[in-house]
Image (tube, rainbow, N blue to C red; front, side, top):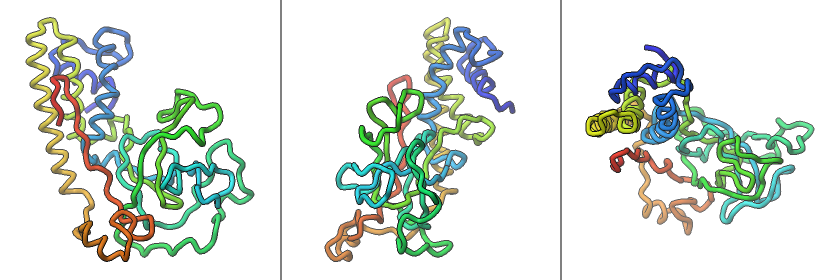
Amino acid sequence: MAYEPTDVANQALDSAGVDYTLGNIEDGSRPAQVTLRAYRTCLRQLLRAAHWNFARKTVQLTLLADATTNTPNVGTLVPTPWIYEYALPIDCVKARYIPANQYPQNPGVPTGNITPSDPTAPLMTGLGVAPLVGQRIIPARFLVTTDSNNLPPNPGYETPGLSPVTQTVILTNVQYAQMVYTCEQVYPSIWDDLFRGAFVAYVASEIALPLAKDKKMGMSLRNEQIKIAKAKIMQARISDGDEGWFSSDIKVDWMQARNTGGGNYWNNGGGNGPGMFWGGYDSCGFADGSAY
């Protein structure tokens, strides 16, 4: 199997009944133009439709602001009631969770800020005890939103999540936060076969009608490819349930609130956990108006 975007695009054209072979996905032909318009949108939507293992990524987040004012060289304006504001990774398609219990680390400062003499040194001492190896991960509460404060110098349109007037950020009460998320995995060589099959069908369903000489036939092919894509997405979600990491230690919110001594399910009386695994899957929207 070939592993270039052009090969994937040609598979989609075949599935859509288009009698044309692309030499390059950017060759400027009508089939290439239509396919390119659908390609990235379909890719990002499909990546959000299941917790694909090949697209799972963990990074140390870049701190933008600290409401406690204890971190030098970063902003102090953080939307209430949050303490820390972090930059959203530029390749993030969907945030999964932020661990509340992790090794304290200094994430450094954003590009363009003044760098401390020893950027690897902890900003404070006694910030917590590192968890034991193999300890159960506790997901923390967080929010993905936009903020007009703490913008980097000379912001533009080129970077995803950034504009001249606002940027996409992550708000949480976890210091030195890491995040587990679904990244925009653009290389077909990394995709698993189930994702590739779903993606080919998804793109084919978007281009079948615009490229069809017989619109009635194009409509029929579109609907057929939508059914194929939905079936593969369903199988991917089943596989995620079989292969993913899950804990049987399930907390019930009213019982957790009762046992926190005045705290609540979200902050456990302390402001970090137990949080939740963020939102599950998203639905894919299809050209016939349906979603799955």
